[in-house]
Amino acid sequence: MRQYQLIATAPMGLEAVVARELKDLGYDDVKVENGRVLFQGDLIDICRTNLWLRTSDRVLIKMGEFKATTFDELFEGTKALDWPEWIPEDGEFPVEGRSHKSQLSSVPACQGIVKKAVVEKMKMEYGTEWFHEDGPRYVIEVILLNDIALLTLDTTGPGLHKRGYRKVATEAPLKETMAAALVLLSRWNVERPLYDPFCGSGTIPIEAAMIGWNIAPGLRRTFNSEGWPVISEDLWQEAREEAFDLLRDDVPLQIMGSDNDREAIDIAYGSAKAAGLGKEIEFRTLPVAKIDPQGDYGCIITNPPYGERLGERDDAEKVMRQLGFVSRKLPNWSFFAICPNKQFEHYFGRPADKRRKLFNGRIECQYYQYLGQLPPRKPRSE
Image (tube, rainbow, N blue to C red):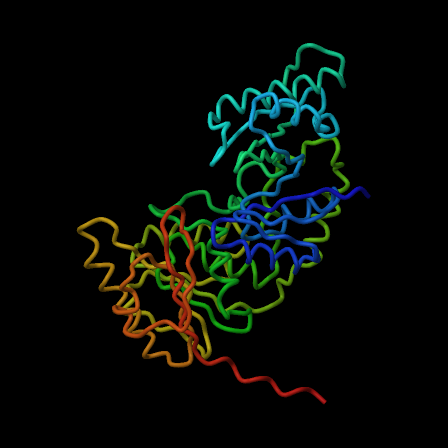
């Protein structure tokens, strides 16, 4: 089957995590760039990566890349690409755009030029002067960076963080993709307890449970490219059947979340139930000072309140201190917290073993990592 250049877009700071996910899925030839990871794949790989990628935002087809310092260069470069290979005569093809450090700085003008060029190419293929655009959706994006134009087709549609299980969100929800990244960057595995004492709508525990049971995060949603004639329903069915076959729902989970907000816990229960994990994750209404995680060698992975509003700063500092106090009662547990507060280590009571810069939305944060003891190795069976 023909191979295509595909792009898994990545939130800033998570490119290496997305690359590792792709390698774990069997894609060896990956190239990491700012905000994206390039890899080769055929049509079924478009289905597989949309279903399986936990930390990427979306999967794109790289249509072409060329220098464009004038509108003529942008028009001719776009027109030279094989749009009819993907877009049928009735396809809807809106154009989105971005420009940075490029002579063609007017994004609306660039979008108009790209749209016009695609229309001209489609006219040549389909022999018509008018396209009704009432069929499947093909979102084209033009990105101009340092006078180089990158043209892509979006196979995903709504971002990959929209798993389909979260119907209601709390006031400042953590994106599902970021929650999955926090778990993947920690030392947690399915044999260890996991606790989130500021679980909000339950995203970290739910994403951990999905990782523990090897649930493909895209199983409960649809994608724009599911309506594309070039990707048959049989390929999507094959990819979904493969995902169902790889489920490991017989593995016991030790995952719990708590929060001081009863309404947030109700939302968390609803989300877990929608994800098919309602009986597998325990949620409680508790302040952090009263949590009592059970088991040894567990992981606390959390997104504590930031206290961005003036009146909430004291409360945020208080819960950081309380989290540090909890850590002293659990000497063989590991603690992982994403927080923008540069004084987090001071309030927690000790410096982190590792830190990693991440962006929660547009907020620059540090992922503070306190590495407790690893579980003892199990003796090899004779």
